[in-house]
Amino acid sequence: MPRKMKMIIAVATMLMLIGGAVAAQTASSFAAQMSGPLRIFTDALVIVHSKYVEELSPSEIVYSALEGMLSRLDPHSAFLRPEAMRELDIDTRGKFEGLGIEITIRDSYIMIISPIDGTPAANAGLAPGDYIVKIDGESTRNITIFEAVKKLRGPAGSSVKINIWRKGWADSKEVEITRAPITVKVVKYRELEPGYGYVKLSQFTRNATQELKKAVLELDKTEGGLKGLVLDLRNNPGGLLDQAAGVSDLFVDDGLIVYTRGRDEDMQNVIKATRAGTVTSVPLTMLINAGSASASEIVAGCLQDQHRAILIGERSFGKGSVQTIVPMPDGSGLKLTTAKYFTPNGREIQAKGIEPDLAVPGDETAGVGKDKPRMLREADLDGHLEGADEEVNDTPDAPGVPPSVTLDEDKKSDDPQLDMALKVLKAWPVFMKAASNKN
Image 1 (spheres, rainbow, N blue to C red):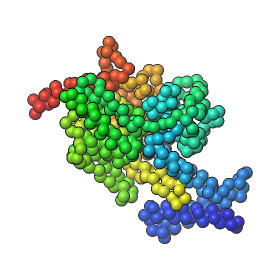
Image 2 (cartoon, helix red, strand yellow):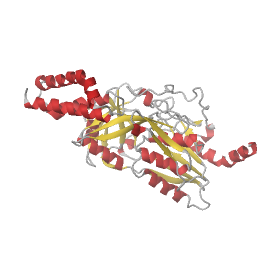
Image 3 (cartoon, rainbow, N blue to C red):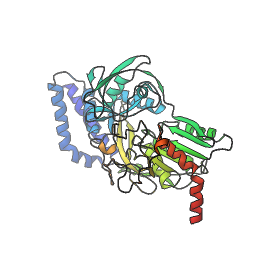
Image 4 (cartoon, one colour):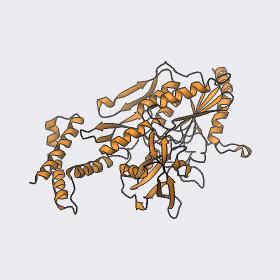
């Protein structure tokens, strides 16, 4: 047998044995279970190496096999080549050069989860649910996330042509976008009216909790302090679990924030609130929509179950799974779904999402309305993990959901959800007085 092929088989065998160890199975048990399938796998490697029309390196064959294996598990598991691992580190830092979009793969094409506010992608009118079918004239069919990121990112000032297809369009449309430095401004805040603050959290990057706390403290410095706060997590695709816990902990001083369950004992985690630095005295409303995913849903579920905030908007995305990054010796890694998370009251969010307390029709970017593209959710993704209470009905007035709240015709604005959040905060003293009298 050729020396190169022996190396391929050795690498494959080592990877499978490592996988068995990670799964906490004994080596002998794992070997017994895998003897037949491993023979098929190694035979396939030999055939690809010897008969494929072009010569492939051992690492390319193994990497491709791992990419296929992980991609078949669910939409969020993936094999990350060394370059992709470096990109992942860049993403969590919130600084890069490119377009500024969060993407996934659906129906073998790139689908936009959300454009980041203030970036070239958002300014060009790209919307959640749009498909990128071509990049610089080349089809994106069957492209990997990493390949897509490599093509879309690039030096600031350079441009890229992408073809966008949106549901309802007869054909795709070409858009040329100039790349720019993307420093994700995680937190934006302003005073809506005297005493009423607004904070938008765009992603759960490494400094999300710290930046949010600074914003709240700044808003509280206004004359008379804060009478109410709107926390906007619309189109926030998520991020780091510890930051979701930290943000929740800012507003809750006791009890559960979130807990996770997985097959591995290490994934049986319970995260509880602490009293230190908690902002508990300020009335809070929170905005969510179909673009609010993962870490955003952890915060929404916690604040809703703990009766700390009134949620306003639309049902969230429904990504209730936890991904663990497992580094490999060569700098590559596995992004593997290892657990599901649950709200303090034990609600499973996977493929269902969080229902708002007040269902209010969407703003201009929410993808809701007669002439707007329907925003996709976790339950729409191919191969998604099934949830215990999976929700596929996209109608705001579904059973168990509060009726949609509409504004008077003469009071409509560009952001009815924010308008409603402010109205609720202003009426807060009345609600509290009524509740007190009832008790």
